[in-house]
Image (cartoon, rainbow, N blue to C red; front, top):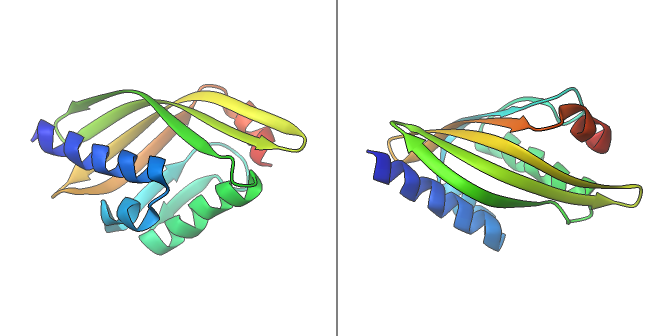
Length: 129
C-alpha cells in the first residue's frame, strides 16, 4: 500500500510542477476535501474538484502566476503521505518564501483529503489578505 500512495502523490506532484491541471485533478477524488489553514480570504475547507480548481486559481491570480511549490521530501505511512514543501509567490508589494508541511490522505488510488500547514501562518495570512 505504501508504494501505491507514493505513486499517486508523485503523479500529482509531477503534473503540478508541469502546470498540467487536468492531470493534477485526475489524481483526486471527486469529493476531495482541502483544508487551507489560516485566517485570510483563501482559508477554509474546500470540498470537490470544481471548487478546488477555483480556489487554486485564486493563488495564481493573486500572485500574477508566480505561485510555486517545491517539494523538499516525502514520506508515507499507511494511507498518508507527508510532504515538506517550500512555497513561493510574489506580488508588487511583497514576496512569500515559506516552508510548510502538507498531509495527503490517499484511498483507492485517489487523493481524498489534504491538510496544509505553514511555518509562519500570520505572514502567509498577511500576504494573501
